Every structure is written in C-alpha cells, then in structure tokens.
Length: 131
Image (cartoon, rainbow, N blue to C red; front, side, top):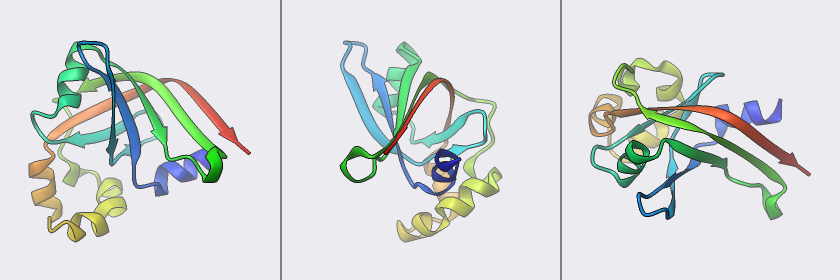
C-alpha cells in the first residue's frame, strides 16, 4: 500500500487539534506508525497538549503531493500516554529520525529528554486520495 510506505518514510505529519475556544490549530510533528496507532513525542507545555487535554479529537494529514495529488488524512482520538517508554525505546522511531536528531544537535537521549511527552493517536477514519 502506497500510504503505508509514506508512513515509514515521510518525516512529518500535520497534527490538528482544537483550542478550548474552538480554533483549529495545526502543527507539524515527527511520528511513528506501528500499524495500529501513531506515536508522537512532544515537549512539555506545548499548546497541542493543552488542546488534547480539553478535546482529544484530532486529525492527521501527510503532506500532499504536487497539486494535491497524494492526500492521506486521518481523524481520530489522541491521548497523552504516560505508559509509553521514551523515544529511545523505539528503534524504528530513532532510525527514521536519527539524521534529523543529529542535524538539530541532539543525541537520541537528549532528544528523548526534550520531547518527553508521548502521545498515542488512534485513527478512527482514513481518507486516501491519489491521482
């Protein structure tokens, strides 16, 4: 499946949350798809965490291809997952982002320390459009 390949290789997905006032807020995030859920790590105190705490309904969007010809979106529910191990415990995540982690001056361990809040996003509906 083409979308499955993109989950392994695309570096970002846009996470859209809703502010308590009802304003959609989109943020690019790094992610790992395990086949059932999306895993995202966040810094503490970020607006997306407050938004998810007040409304767990979210959407995820991969970057579209040229002229919007390769669109993958998900709607689902996010949770702040205290039971998830740090990013360094996910070899797939570290392998996917090692170059970027090092490029930003982190080690996997320092990245995991800075991005210590785990999110688990369970999709409920997918829309895939490919021209």
